[in-house]
Amino acid sequence: MNKNIYELLGLVVALSFILALKGLSAPKTARRGNLIGAAGATLATVVVFFAPLGEGKSHHNTILILAAIAIGVLVGVPAARKIQMTQMPQLVALFNGVGGGAAALVATAEYLNLGTGASTAEVVATVFTVIVGCTSFSGSVITFLKLQELMTTRPVVFPGGRFVIAATLAGVLGTGGWTISSGANTPLLVMGGLALLFGVLFVLPVGGADVPIVISLLNAFTGLTVAASGYVLQSTLLIVAGTLVGASGTILTRKMAEAMGRSLFGTLFGAFTAKPQVATGEQEARSVKSGSPDDVAILLNYAQRVVIVPGFGLAVAQAQHTVRELADMLAAKGIDVAYGIHPVAGRMPGHMNVLLAEANVPYEQLVEMDEVNPTFPQTDVVLVVGANDVVNPAAKTTPGCPIYGMPILDVSEAGNVIFLKRSMRPGFAGIENELLYDAKTTLLFGDAKDSLTKVVNALKAL
Image 1 (cartoon, rainbow, N blue to C red):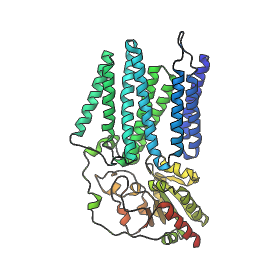
Image 2: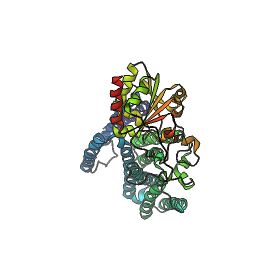
Image 3: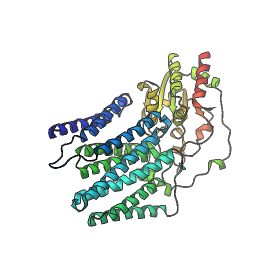
């Protein structure tokens, strides 16, 4: 392939990635943005096979590369198609980790291939790629285990944990400096092992409620590793793609931290200084006001404005189509209906937006937290479907709790609050929600989809 054509196609790929990010910034254009990004990634993969090489050079291991791509397709496509919406955050975390690990492996292989012929700049880029890539890989595995609840979602801390993390980081940096100064292979491999350990220790102290922030941060790490490996491989495409992912991931991490109302450092290491919380089972049992689907239907039928707050429980029950049917019925009765969307509702950024888009909920009805909060005093009924932490007043009233300082949806200011819950089990953060015991709160227990279906039927009978 002519070099000019190759560079032109590279520009097309870079432009497609930029347009994809722009499209993903809004629910209405997200699907198109995703398709543009996928097309750009496909083009980037194809043109590599036709990249112009220097004199005397040729492409090697093409069959092995194609076989690896085929295996990836056979694993990735079924996984992406069959994955449930509730497990999407885990899939994102896992894929992100694989990307970081792959960049670290490629950089290591290239370093071993170059041997003593590697320049200082190439060695520095390799060291950076291996450190950050290995950290991203092992850290993403821990986030996957937490989200999948294969391990505790609570922060994991142990005596002297801060010093162990600091010592491991010092070991990583020390072996990194040793690799740069010596150019030897052994310190690079030791550094990679320590970076893997650091990734585990880095994520363990993070509680389940803060995992979405860590996923975003590790995504930024992966982008940086890809950009650095692009320098090692002298690939402009990798540099551009990695820089875009790193920059967008960094911005998203910052916004996520702001949405949680805390510093990034506090999110990552706050568990070491947090005060112990009273176990839920040790608290005094209190009564709550439960209702029937008929009671809920009556409240909704005579309301003028209703705000639906979706949460992870909505995704678990796959009730997005039923909640859309309920909203359409209310709108047909002349009732003003909106969906209050918290930035971290569910278990990853945009989780609720994607879930509701699947049910073709009008984008105009999706209202972000900053816009919907001022309207709650004029709202007759708030229907909370499977959410807990994002409406928990403890974020404002209980210093030291895992979500303290996090901006929440102020549903307590509405006239009536209806919670659809399976049980009185706390949310992902593991703390009680005092709003459940408020006199204005009615609880409708059961599977969200089943409960909403009964409410819809009761509403039809009115």
